[in-house]
Length: 463
Image: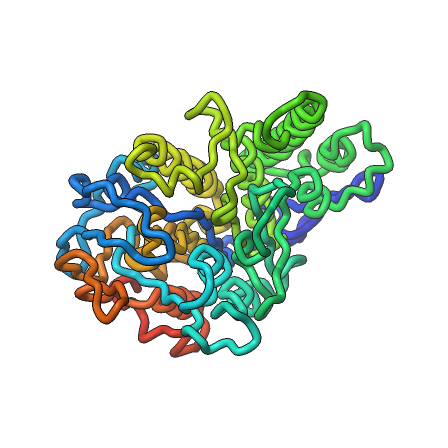
C-alpha cells in the first residue's frame, strides 16, 4: 500500500469499496499538484434583491411580473472591483469571505415564446443564444460541466456527478424545470436525489450483509492500513471515516423518518415534511466526499426545482411546509419569509464551502482552493422574472487561477427598466453569463476563445 494513489480503494466484505482521500504516508509526492475541480450550485427562482445585492437595501418591493419583466432598479455602482460587502443574505459567508467573489452585472439571454422558469434551469450552464438550437423549443445544448469534464475528469471513475435535493415525484412540469446538467439538447444527465441510492453508487456496496454499516465492512482493512500511517494521516483517516459514518447515520435517519411520515395522513407528500436543511447538507456531504477522494472532479448540485408548487419544510424557518415558488409571486406579502429562505440557502452553501476549506490537499492547500464552485440562479428576482443582473457567487480559485475576496461589478445600471417597442429593456445591459463560463474554462486550461453567446473573458477575475 506504500505507493497507493489518492484514488485507492479499501475493499471489504460484500464487494463494498471506499475511496481514500489524499494521505501523505501512502507515497503521493507532496510536490504533485492537486486536481482541479468544478462545481455548480444552483438555487431556483432568483433572490430578494434588496437583501442580497450591496446597495439595494432601500429597494421598493416589486410586484409580480408574470412572463414580462417588471420595472426594477439596481444599485448605481461603478464598473470595477470593490470590497466585498456581506449583505444580510450573504452573512453566512463570513468565515470564508476571503475565498469568495460576488459578481454582479451578468445577464442570461431569453428566447421568447417559452416559459421563463424552464429556461432558467435547463439553460443556465448552456447560455446558447436564442434560436441557435433548432431541435428544441429552448436554447439548451450541452452544458458547461460536461465540457469541463473532458479535461478535468479524464482519469476519474465518474466523468461528472449530478446531485439534487428534490425527491418529490408529483411534478407537473417537464424535465427542463428540474435539471441543470445536460449531455446535449434534450439529453438530460439525470441527477441523484435519493441519499441511499447515491451512497450505494459512490461506495459500490452489493449489500450482501445489509444489516452492517459499510464502514464496518472495511474496518479490518482500515485498521491494517492505519498502522502504516503517520500521526497526521491517522488523524485525517479518522476524520474521513467519521464523516462517512455520519453520512450513514443521516441516511438511515431520513429514510426512517420518511417511512414513518408515509404512514401518517398528510395534506402534502411525505417528502414535503423532510427537514430541508438536513437533506441538502447530506447530499452536499456525499458530493464533497466524491470530490475529496477523486471519484470525480466535476459536479453539479441543484437545490430545488423551478416553478414547482410542491412545498418544502424549511425546518429552522417555518412550522409547516411552504412553497418557495408561490411565495415569490407575492413579495409584498411574503418578503420577510423569502429573505429567510434566501438566507437559509446561503447557509447551506456556506456549509459546503467551510467543509471543503477544512479538507487539506497534498500541497497544503484546501479542497476549496483547488475548486471553482459557482453559486447562481437563472433569475435575478423571482417576482419580476428578470433574467438579467443575476445573483452569482464564485468560490475557490482552481489553484490560484482566479481572484477571490472581492465584489466585481460588470455593469453600471443607471435607472429602472423601460418599455421600448413593447419590450422591457435595461438602459445599460450587463455582460453575458457565458463570459463567466468562458473565463472558468480558460482558468482550467481549456484553450477556447468562445463559449455559447460569450463576448469575451472577465479579465478582472483572472489572477
